[in-house]
Length: 444
Image (cartoon, rainbow, N blue to C red):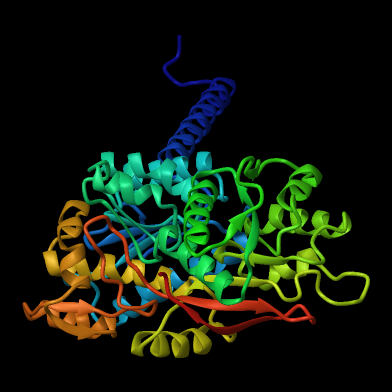
């Protein structure tokens, strides 16, 4: 047999080689796809020159906030505030000599999605701290994962009083804090507001979760302490956030014809409840007392207008954690320059939560959750030089000096339970449907 291959044999060999090469390239491509970290529900922001979200030498933080779901109308504003802080910090030298990296995840206002997102941030992205969540139910789901992985979770809006008690019991090991005060205080403020308006009787309707039920209990205690009467106390009205119709609940809240109804709602489901009460003719002679969960123009617009052409919510009163001081003025200016719209509720609280993570890491001279946890109260409480500019705060810390951060949302003096006290803005709905801030009220 000749040593030279025939033309036919050469064609067969070439075909086989091409097939093997194609198969190998396909396997490599598939392997690369499997190795790449998933984008999940949110995007990833990385500093210049860093192409991998998991390969970073500097401080890496996450946000776990609702871009979708029942609290999206407020959550989307908070989502925008966090990268504003990261950009500000990176423009003035970063933390511990490196840029800060941010990974953002949408928790969908859903505890299951929040737990999944927290798992991703803690176990795959290896973040040191997280800004989140807004819904107390989501923070409840995320906290055990954060604590287990030694990740600091600072919420800009989870206000359930349950967290205070659990923190005092040691369940969070110092890995929990919040920049918005707990509902223990807001419920007292809302009860005080009702008393100041000479509202002597009130019904209640709340979302059936830690946030709603915790607020209801504190409001009832405070309102009765001020001489008020709860008309449906024997059978509190609590609604399922996954329900689609609320006629029965809307009617039950107005049992006994109360002068007011304290309604602890989320925007999407809450708008259906308010409309149902109006359509049943039950709410026309009562004042809705509302909370921060529905402090948005989107909520008022969803409720809509009545037969007289005025907003169904005209005259409603509400409370929302307020903000004040030099930090607020500076952040308001920054927000309006960058976003070209008025500053919304909770954006300052989200900004401050991210700022505290950065400042605590710089104070600790380490980018781990454990190190940040040990410095949270040190950078937010006296003694130390009061600073509202995060860049100035970072510079002082680099010099080895102590600071007392005065945030965009207030003084953010975090106590041993991770709480701040704060004050509250009073808001109302005008007949045209526009929101308007009309004053302040402090807890009793």
